[in-house]
Image (cartoon, rainbow, N blue to C red; front, top):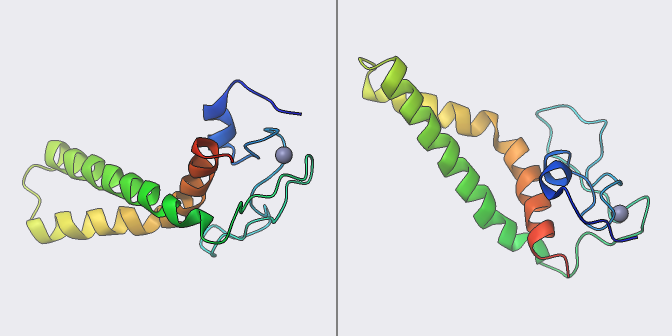
Length: 118
Ligand SMILES: [Zn+2]
């Protein structure tokens, strides 16, 4: 039941890296609560946490995503609000990174599972 193809779609929809159909995270959660992962895929029974500490590497991807969002926020503020004070700029960057932290958490794990599926 190995499905190849549109990895980007699988990653963005947070689907199982093996079959591309099953959900990786519980869907009925609020936007700001800590995301809870399923243990296995409902469809193909793929075990998501391959070994203890498997998702430690996802931390680096999450860091990269946060830095990318910080740079985008900085460039947007610099371009659109060129007379913005430094403190407001730093607070804006911190706010954006905090706002997207839960999405980064989920996205980084799904990206990591797709890079290192075994
Ligand atoms: Zn699956």
